[in-house]
Every structure is written in C-alpha cells, then in structure tokens.
Image (cartoon, rainbow, N blue to C red; front, side, top):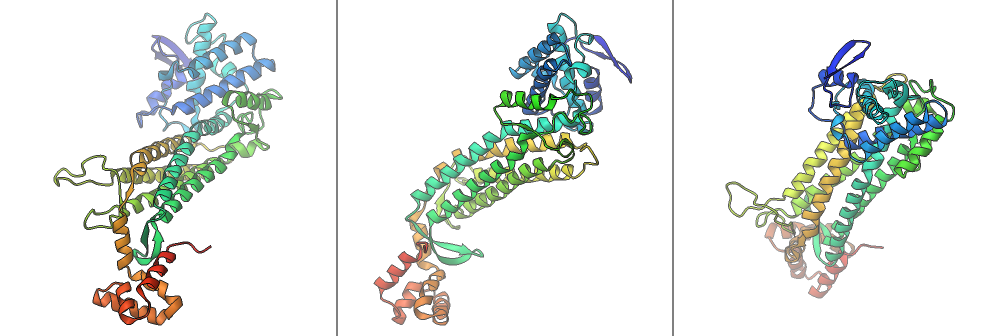
Length: 458
C-alpha cells in the first residue's frame, strides 16, 4: 500500500494502481452503475493531455523531459495499456472532475515511473501542475466529448449506409412486383413492392446524411478556455497549438472555437448530433414495424414478404417463426430515443459558464452511437439481406383490393367509381369483375390500367 493526500486528508491506495487520491475518493463516492468510462472517452482525454504536454513544452510552460514522459504515458494508454486504471463511474461529480483527475493521475504516475520515480511521488510530474497545465475540467471534458463522438460516429454512418444499400438492392429486385398500397391501414391504389423498399432506402440514407451534417459542429473546440473561458493559467498560443496537434492525432480538421465562452457554456453540438441520431432511430423503428406487418402471417397476416428465419419463435407453439431481428431493432431504437431524452435534459441543465451534467452527456451520446450502430449492422446482415418477396400474394391483394376503384375515376368519375367499390365490397366481387359485369371496360383495358397505375407519374 501507499499513502496519498489531498486537502481533505490522507487515503491508502494499493501500490499497483496508477490512479491517485482523487480517483480513490470518486470510487468510494460513486458506486452507482458499475460501469466504467467509455474507452473512446478515455482515449479522447488522453489525446488532449498528449497534445497539451507537447504544446506546453514548446511554449516553455513545462520542461521537455516532463512533456516527453507524459507523451510516452499517453502513447502507452492509446496503445491499450492501463485500460483497467480508468475506473470512475459515469454517474459522478458534476462536470466530470472525477474522471478528469483519474486521467491526470494515471498519466502523472506513469510519467513519474518513466523518470525513475514512484507512484504517488509527484515532485517531478504532478497531475495538476504539469499534466493539467493550462487546462480545466471545464474545457477538457466538452472537448473530449467532441473527439470521442467523432471517433465513434463513422461506425454508425457505415452501418446506416450498408442498410440503405441493402434496402436499395431489394427495391431493385422487387421493382416489377405489383402490390396494393395501404393508407390508414386500408386498401389503397396499386404500387410496386420495390417502391416501398426504395423509400426505406432513401429514408435511411437521408438519416445518415443528417447525422453527418450535425457532426460538423464537433470540429470546433473550446480547449484553452480553462475554467471559465478566459484561458487563465494558459500560455498565449496554447489553444491554437493544441488544436493543430489534435488534428494530427485524430485525422480530423479541428479548429479553436471563435468564442471559448460559448463553447464551454453551450451543449448544442451534442444535442444536435443526438437529435439527428434520434431522428434516425424514429425512421428505423418505423421501417422495422412495416417489415413486421408486411411479413405477418404466414397464413393469417399480410405475408407479402418473408423475413429470414433465424430462430424458433415460441416455447410452446411448434414451427412458429417471429420477426425477431426487427423486434430487436425496435428495442434498440426505443433505448436510443430514451438516451437522447436524458441528454437533452442534461444539456439544458447548465448554468452560467458551466454545464455540470457533462458526464451524463458523454455517457448518453457515446452509448447511443455504439448501440444503434451495432443494432443496425446486425439487422442488415441477419434480416434485410435475406428478405424475399411473396409475389403471388402481392398480386392477389392487388386483384382483390377495392383501391382499384381509384384507377376508374378519370374514366367514369368519382361517383360511379364509388358505386363500383361499394357494390364489390357488398357482393364479394373483385373490382375487375364488377367493372366487367357493368360493361364499363373490357378485360384488356382494365388490365392495362392496373399495370400502368402502379408506375409513378413523372
């Protein structure tokens, strides 16, 4: 064991842990969810510390050997080392001070070891004086949330693009299959099955585009604002140099915020990204529900499409197969929408120069990105790519749909077309048979109208 102290007193820590007294207090204070910080959030904080160490050495704020040791410690973490040393629960002290000090302490202790010192001996590299020089929780955490989100978003965007591509392939495969549209869950005019899937593909692609557009604001960083936006304790040129170094480390084009006060006060970039992800979740759950309806049956439902059978659907009914992948996606989307609500409430909860709910914002945003990406990826592979059409069922519904009366309106007028539909519904005849019995059209003319009706008017 070793002893470390802060202004509250002394605390005992195991010799093998790299975190220090403030982290230990946080572990004692916040045994809430049993979760640890998202790895991307840890990596983002460490990249900030790496860039800050280099910039501070260049600006004469810390010595070169101190910076080199901090950089080496950062690289060790970024290469996967000491992952088990970042231990503060996401539900913690406001603003993220506990997590931030966890990062500062781990890097300081490892840097001191590299300089020949021991853990807890901060004479050479101190968590606050050196690792955190010119910085504050208040500018580091919102910057880290930006970097972590930029790190995780490509996986979600790739998953949405792959889903859109898969739906577009089905649209092409089903392009020539006529079916009855439904509005208000009632029979409507003829369309093609490919039209439905093409619309799904467009909705998913647009959702991905909106997420990508919303992420542009994440490239503007408030680092260098320090505690309240003035940059107090930092050296001139620090924030510009850190942004340049972070651009090199991350591959993103990052720029200093034109107004550091706004960048630290406002959580709008995160609500924008989360809101666009929520919109994607709303579209996805709508599409999943459509697929569940279209595949319902197989004998007592619509059964216009067949979803891949991936597992037995019942513990009591033999042979039952359920749309489990669509159901899974629904649950993922509901969870993501809930995450967005939590994030939105946290974003409006800031006062004056600081939003103390930033740990929750980081937790919710990164979780919803990763969860939706995984759900969409699995849904695409194990459901959408294996969908087949029941073309005969689709054609049979077209033939029996009272919605076919609509195609008669330009020829016989709304009133007479209504009578045809009413009579067909009452007698059980098809619209086609009713039209032929009344001598309104020949069979060839009626079939031609049906074939043309499902083609979009340019």
